[in-house]
Image (cartoon, rainbow, N blue to C red; front, side, top):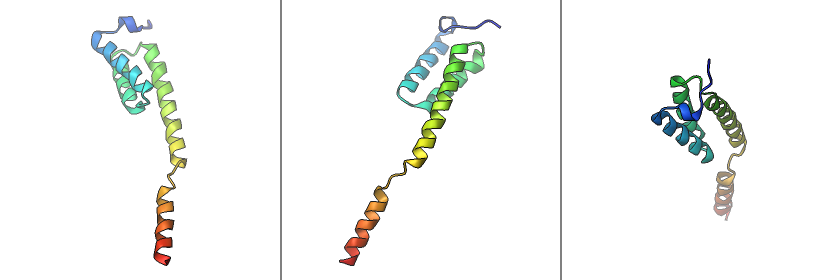
Length: 88
């Protein structure tokens, strides 16, 4: 199995590749993952896309775990303020 490079991709695949790279830079991981999966369905030998897809999936899962614990405390503060107003 010969490894393909970016230069060997068709024009549409190359445009999808560039969109995926741009989406990763903008931290739009879901869109990038879907683009990379589409490329790899057509060109499974494109090793660079496979590596980038794996890295993107790991980064997305790590950011999802962090956001779970970063629950906003603003609603709690609003509820406390409302209680104080009702007491007065």
